[in-house]
Amino acid sequence: MGLLERFQDKLIALKAQGRMRLKHQLEGEKAPVLTEAQVAAGHPKVSVESDFRGLSYGARVTTTFGWVWMTLVTAVFIVMFYATANGTVRINGRLVTEPAWWHYLELTALCVPFLLVGCALTMSRYRVTLTDDQIVIRWRVIPYIGWTWRLVVGEQVSVRLAYDGTEINGKPVPAVVMASDGKEASFGSMLKDDVKEYLAGVIQHYYGLPSEAQPSVPPSEAQPSVPPGIPPESPDRQG
Image (cartoon, rainbow, N blue to C red):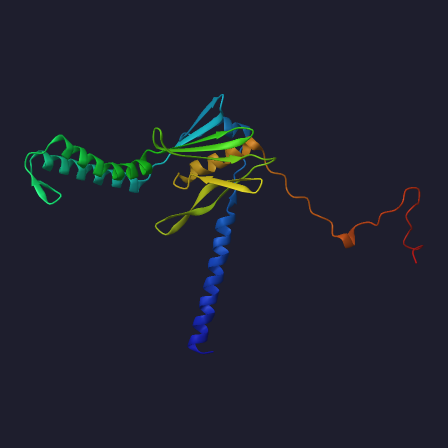
């Protein structure tokens, strides 16, 4: 076998391993089974609230990269604000020696998007509300700014920790994935692993473990139907 053939075989093997790894990541792991005592004990990083809307669990997203980002953006904002106040900043190519109020407004508007990115990685919160007919996931960067999505609940709900497309430094990270009636919703890929495991466990505990699919009997192995009143033939009488 030549060098080219060995390289092709190695490439095919790597592709097969990659497909198997991706399949395993997409299938994920089942949510941990929590006891009543574990659910009642709670989690130090997860808040619980019960009201007319349902049972809600809340958790905050915090990452090291987010805090580094916030520190750098805040430092740059302070330096630019100080330089603007001293009249040593060029705006649109022109040196502004006597800044007006709108110059500070422009500076603030420039920094707001970068600050929001930092807030999303350090202070944003998930709030998952469980009811009998739907699961509502709310993600808020700051109060009243964020996204909300829902999953309609059917007869049963399955929860697992699986890859939903999010990667950190090129490494896939699992999220809490919920499925019901052929539809899925996911959240929390940036949460800490212990928080994700606890949330997956309490959600599955709330809706109960999904029943396993009953194995079907092949038609060839099924018992032949016998009319009422006629006893089935014994093996030595057949034929």
